[in-house]
Length: 198
Ligand SMILES: [Zn+2]
Ligand SMILES: [Zn+2]
Image (cartoon, rainbow, N blue to C red; front, top):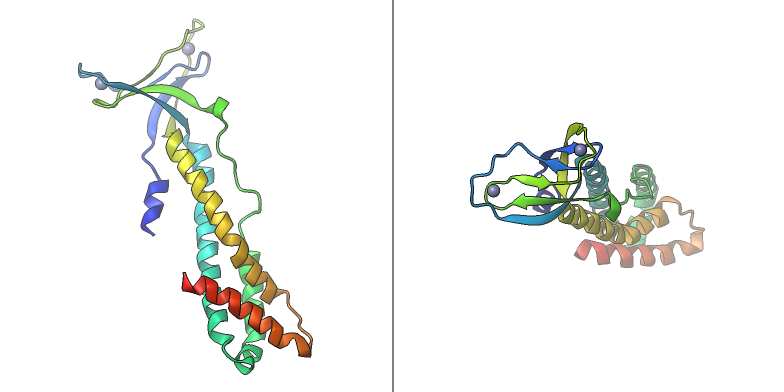
């Protein structure tokens, strides 16, 4: 999927003082600097979100494929009854690989660092009143707006997941009594056709 690129933004490698929180990078300014304020989050927290997003996306893709198969076999009562045992197994296997229910949270505001990033040379500055001894650690950071964008993508992928996973659960954990098979087929078909249309 081409969209995934948007969720893997370029990271900024910056040093940060563990005492005062000053930040910067090794760029030397070329003269005509144009500093813009930005907020960044640490790349490790961003990577947690990205990993969750990719898993969820894959899960949704598999569920959509499952829905397409349900749509295909629910055309007649006979084909549905024949396919049901296999569908049930597949649904259980799929659901067992679901990403954990609790998505990782976006980095809270008070853990985001304010920096000044030069649009011309890429130099980063975030001066603070130093406490005397600066101890610099280098790490990777991602812009807060990219982080928030990914967080929003996770939220919509989770919305998308709900009805898809419900269909898989409906099939996976079903044990219809003889008279109920037709009702189940109709419900599954209705749901499956909705998803496979999109
Ligand atoms: Zn500059
Ligand atoms: Zn310092």
